[in-house]
Length: 76
Image (cartoon, rainbow, N blue to C red; front, side, top):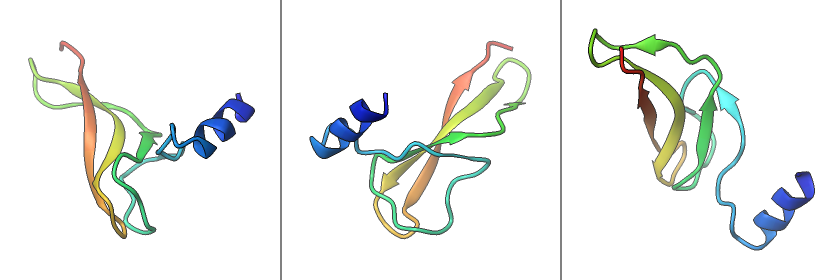
């Protein structure tokens, strides 16, 4: 798996870092498309529209870039 990731990085087919955190980054330089896995997912929202934040995605490169939550609806 590690060799495949290294090969993917060297060939430019992988643009994101694989990390986890409890919130979007507030420091460091990030590229558009980088993602951070949510290390502490919980169900949020109101009845009928509850969701889980699965990841954070960088939508504009920078330091620290512009980050949005990637949410999935739970159906609750």
